[in-house]
Image (cartoon, rainbow, N blue to C red; front, side, top):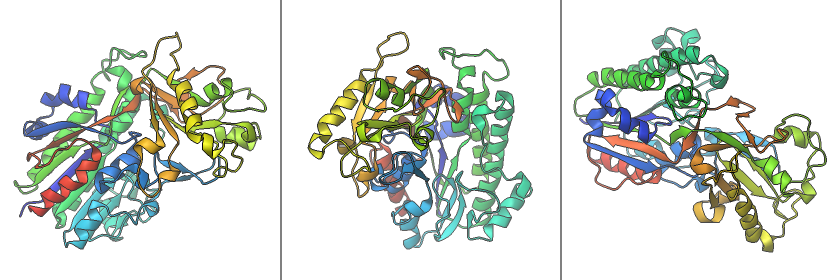
Length: 449
């Protein structure tokens, strides 16, 4: 009996796949049957993107635009993502479980704590530690730990990867690929399943930290013979391990390889709140002597919220809120002025230039134009992509400049991009243009099993 296997490669960039596909023989077998670029979500960030792909729903249904979300009526306090926020959403694994299909989920972002489905779940990188209940059923945890050589060998994620020595990080990311496929292979060869979804995070971590070693057009390019093929070698390792896995599975397995978003070189970041403050849209009582996160400024009472028009979050895109009367604790923008104020703020941010006065290709999205669903009110009023996403964003204030490279978490070589990959060893019966189309296709493929 045929089965459907989805391998997600978080952050796999179409331009890389298209250039490097001849180095990836197992993926090329799929690529030659069907390959396309698909549009990611706005913003192209891991949690909203994967949730959209596996639900078919616009991010406005989740109220999620990042790995965290702003708490209601708070300017700087936030909650961290948990599956509990979306457990009422009818994801593909819920729908298939109800129909009697067995599902296996391995490392799918957003699945901690693990959903109790008809099948098996190993949570993704939100897993807090190996002592937590990160599998369903619970007994699977001990099998998973044994499969990798014990609890001390289990790799949830490569933490603080932005600040690691690049050569040590490269080795750690290769080890992570091998580790993940050990777990995936254990589950998919021991247990019965009809639909399996596994997502690998190593490419995402590598994009952010190793891009400057292969991209000669990167403004911070570093020539290093050991790392110049580092990113490609991680793809090669994924392809090699995928080939080993497929050898252990029935020949008629339907296979999809896809990503949630891509990546592109990052030149700089725009210090958005610094810019808003200079324009008089964010009012400071006092300027900090050194760069500070927005929350720290707020805690010290340095922001005059009663006179502030707009403020921003976000590291890859600018997530901008309007200080709306009645919605925010100290809102000063009248409801009748809301859309005009949004356009005023958006026009200012869209007009921002680079450090040398160069024109940037900035793009603005208004909440009412791009989001739909029951939790649209939680989404930012304005989302801004700076310079076609070659520039990121920064919410910190105190650089005395509109441009920086680092956020509180460290520097990035790359930003996320708005397109993802999708390839399959069976030509789809429907058009796949964006991530919202993926859920429907998965259902159609499963129904032919």
